[in-house]
Length: 267
Image (cartoon, rainbow, N blue to C red; front, side, top):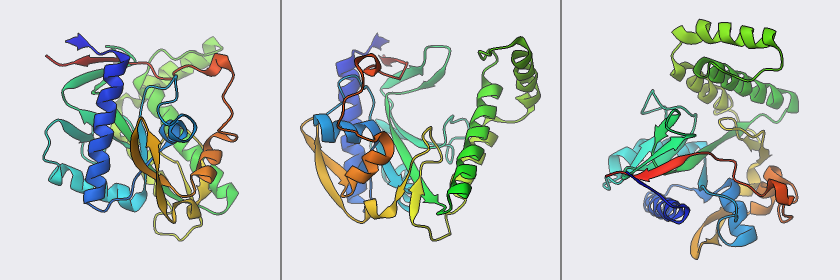
């Protein structure tokens, strides 16, 4: 295998994004470039200088249709959809589109093995009551913590007592399949799927982001690396819900990638 340079990695990610964006346009699926990719488009017209991944977002109805039709209609064997709904061994509660010509290890060869990919985040109805909203985030975080304890034996702890308790819990959880916890995160995220609410939230990833649905009443386009992709017309409110004053650069010591991985071309 040949190790990929950062420029090669980004080129592969952009190829995936182009393919997915066109697939969504052809199949009337609403998507938008999301998270750091959206921030990069608005603030830098491309990648944030210290970033190295690409994210897109979808609301639940579009996301469910996407993961249903992509495996059936995608005729390009180079790209593969991975999510728990079609692969019980998958390790996160949202989807990824992989480049099958590559292999990517997170954080290294002892971690998860996928391919160079872009993340497809899903946003679900969020309760209008803030107390219920926090309960939903807390349930997600509990399932994520149990999953981490189950899959990682050596977790850093401040005291030997808590370390021993986590090791004991690690072995107790061994009889439960990993997919159980990821499935519970997805189930929790969809709790208000059939309830009319005014907000959407991120219940499958890391943030406690919530925002008005008005953000997605219409879409426009923004430039990213010399190309045009869909963004919510309300992107300012959306980015503020993520980052606050998003046009202000973070301190120099925080201008670093938060991702650890090794990427290679397959022979």
